Structures are given as C-alpha cells and as structure tokens.
Image 1 (cartoon, helix red, strand yellow):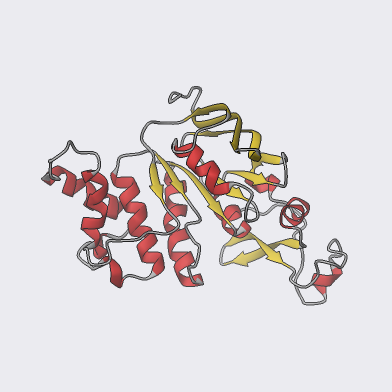
Image 2: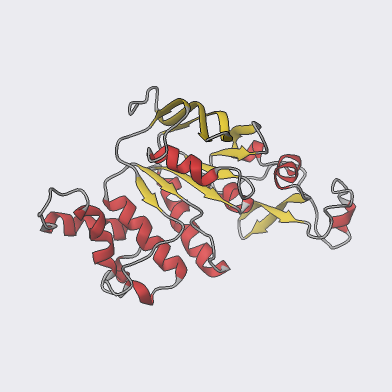
Length: 284
C-alpha cells in the first residue's frame, strides 16, 4: 500500500519478515509524520537492513502492512562504481533512472541535479571526480543523488559507517539542516546512539526477539534502554557546546561484567552523568 493519512508519511503495521523458519522481526509497528527523522538502532543481526529493504519495497513482508510513497530516495551503506565520473554525473544517474528507455537527461534534469547538490551544500563538488572525494563528501553526493529523484522520503543505511570524526561531522551537518528545514522525511540506521540523539525525532530500537521499542528519541534513548539494547553500560551526558547544550552517549568499555548502574564509575574519571534529557538546537 502506498497511501498514508493524517500527516503520516511512512508506516509499518504489525510487520513480520521470515526467512524460512527464521523470524527476522515480527509485530513491528511505527509511524513517522511527514518531515520528521527516525533513527533505527540495534546490534548486528537484529534485522535493521532487512527492515530498510521492507520499507523500500524490495523485501516482501510475511505479515503486516507497509504504507510508504512510491518514490523513495535511498543512500546505501556501500556504493560501488562511479569512481571516474564527475559528481554531477553521479547525481544525474538518479534522474536517468526515471527516464523512458533510450532517453538521455535533459537540461532540466541537469538543473535538478545541480539543485540537489545545492541542497546539501555541495555544488562546489559538481565537477570533481567522485573517486577523489573523502568518505563524508561521497556520502553527501550520494545524498544529493537521492534528493535528485524528487523523493520526499529518504532512507539511509548506516550513512556514517567507516567515516572518521571530521567526515561524520560533515555528513551530520547536512542531515541536521534537512531536519531543520523539515523538507524531507528521513529514516536511517546507525550504530551511533549519539547521532540518533542529535538528529532524530523518533527512534526504533530493535532488541532481541520480539522486543521492538518505538517512541520519541529524546525520551526513548535513555541510559537503561541503550544499556539493555547493546548489552553493555552506556551513559547519557550533557555537554556544553558554545551556546548550546548537547546530549550525547558515552559507552563504558571494559565494564560489561561489572555493575553498569554505578554513576561513580564515571564521576571518578571526571565525567558527570546527565540528570535530565538534554536540549538541542531549536527547530521552532
């Protein structure tokens, strides 16, 4: 089903996917309003990528219902090809895929590709070789390619995977601006809870078995919930960043077999746990 209602842009209702006798997930439900961002978190093997495929329509649901637009912009975790192409040509590939057979992109398609690069602040990369870019720049060009389809729903599979901190910051800045503009609905998977806190309105946590939690990211991404999700102690902290207060997540490595609920383990290291959910930049 492709239609949604009451401002909901994408929805899953009691969704289930099985591969033979193996159940990947079941009774999974969520609804994301138009213009909001949702993060999907969970350890490896919990079905995050399978869920994205189900959202894209490439993975059949065993049970349940999917409601999503016909046109979805997708940014894969790994992209192969295009190393010797200009970035504008990589973005134009999205337009070419929408054209009738034997057609070539028009001037209008070229303008839309440039507009997509503008949207993500990457017009200056248009004539550069895609293979010469940093990892973060590549992801931003691929995001522009997804935007060039004209899709208002964007799905990203671990967009910051394998990026260094500077490139993570580059990519997160672009996604943050998309969220601020409320121009697109964005769904992304991540292994970085701090990215989810920074970007997401909603969060979907894929615990073991049938335990899937969905709710407001600022409330759901608590210390206890994240520690249970990843099977190790994590702390949520408040950090002052200029004029903003930012909430982040700090993993406590090496303490898995110890009492992960003891705040003094952090305080001894000069880090103070957050006493309440943090406020981030205002989107009003």
